[in-house]
Image (cartoon, rainbow, N blue to C red; front, side, top):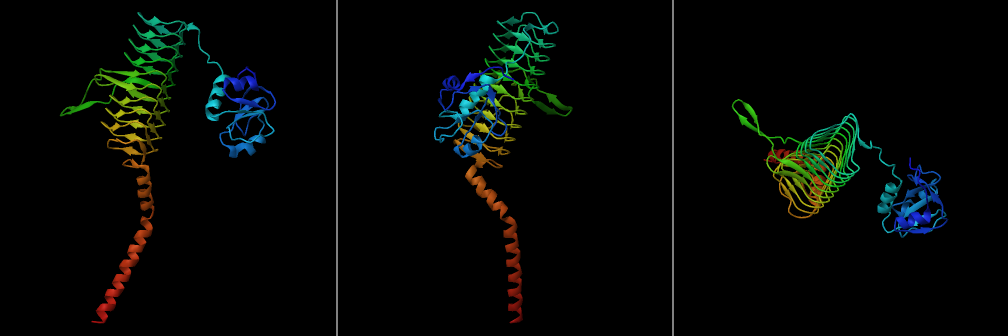
Length: 347
């Protein structure tokens, strides 16, 4: 729990907002339904203000169109952004070992920046380069000749393969594997012959990789993740894939090999992308959709195979009508038979 405290007026300045009401002291952050004394809560929509006014929070972060209530508040143009900054301000400081733990293995030729932390039973391979303020948490594995940029954190039980390059300010969450072999085999009469994956993975600055996410090394060149991209837990990125800048990949997204994804692409949970696909910038894929051909126009896509969301919804509405249509067809067939029987009787 954070031990910091700020007058509301000071916190408003830090958030680039405007304080309103009593200058209470804020000691932490809470949700609307559970916030207590000294905590500040987040109101994204004015419709939530009645609930906010009855909550236990000492102050609120509200949008500009919020009406004045009895609680102190910080008015800001972007309450969600302000709330994320408040969480950062009150977040507990990460605990890590100062320096190299006695049980860690650091092989020959490793270059260490300043203020590097390597935790218990971690392994760092030979000729690896770790930038300033890098944190290698306990039980993590960093292969030889890897490069990890300034202020990047590698969490416990992460695997970083040899020659992988990771930029600055990245977060690699627990259990992730970056640089394992891509899935490549050549069928032969004797069985499947392994195609050795001798490329690497390049992760640019400010990327976050979720827990148990896997990013496979390329066959020859590099699997690349663009700057600012964020991945949820359980995402799979196959070999030779390139992902652009500022993309969002939700849980259990799967991207098959040699696919190229543009900037600002959002993929809902369990979206699946076929191999050798190209997806342009500014595309949003709905959860569970399947992309089996190139997407060349920005927009929202869903369904299987993935199409423009409006078309997919019309198709889904038609599918839902099928039981009624089948009943109608059966009824029409019955009536036709009856008419045919009447005509036969009339000669």
